[in-house]
Image 1 (spheres, rainbow, N blue to C red):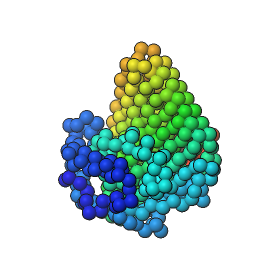
Image 2: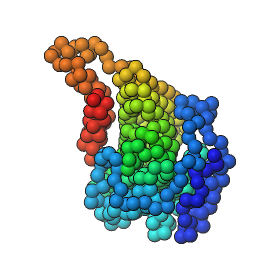
Image 3: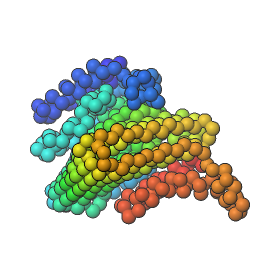
Image 4: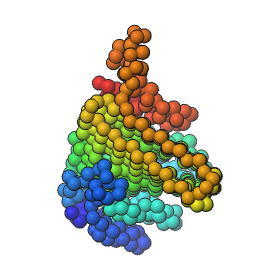
Length: 424
């Protein structure tokens, strides 16, 4: 089980030598690492015994006319965007402001190597077997660059569609928002068929510069029969602000790492997440709030609803370095189980090496409150309507955290859609 079929490796003929060196390093690291098992730290709740990487073949091309099996949360629109179908990536629009770059990552290597080289693989290189796999195999991908002081008014939309059953897709994105700049970026992982059997391996690297602001929405809505194993990491500079929104709506099993690294004094990281599971889906989110500088703040809130025999695990870590005095950090994970067969695990954690901090966490797993149901029914509301009100209010907290954001309506509509399906 050394690798997904090597015959479909990306062409490196037009890549610079340093990129080829990264690929070789990734391939060596991937080949030398064993497949994680449940006794390994971080993998206790996610079983990869059924995953055979050799069964998935990377596609060198793709049909750009392919459409996702479900409507995407955010349409491509006419603004700056990148669309990739299997191995075929293309830019759909250009930057609307001077100096803004929105293109495939492969094109950026050729056209803007000086902007890509300082950042590519500097956050996520060979952190585990799967990030190493991505480093060696990614193709196409997306690159977003917003220069200092520029505000991008329209959301940048990056969409990756896996269209071939039995395929492996390695998606890599690099988002750089320079000092004093502002942007909204949407990244969507999609499947062309609701029954597609695939292996989806994404890596995202985000850089938020000094006094810059980024709203970033990542939607995972791939087929319920597909695996997802990916890593996402953001670094925030002095007085920078990142609001990271993650929606987990699809996949059959896997794990997604989300790491926020607050590197500059006064940096702020806000993370809002929601997942909705059904059938036998297994969703695994591993989040880290890393405080590496004084006066930094972070606030994470994840909510999940699970029905039928779906399962979920959230493990979150707040890590405070010795120099990160006056850190203010909070994390919470709340789960609502809608059926007897559903199950959730919530594992908050703290690693604090500074002595002037405020760090707290909360986690709950429960069912719809029968007393609340009864109260609503005494007001003439049917049981079904009452349950919808309570579950809708539970998920509505996610949208409330986006009040005033360009992402609010899209996220609220997506959660409403999932709510209707969950209570159907």
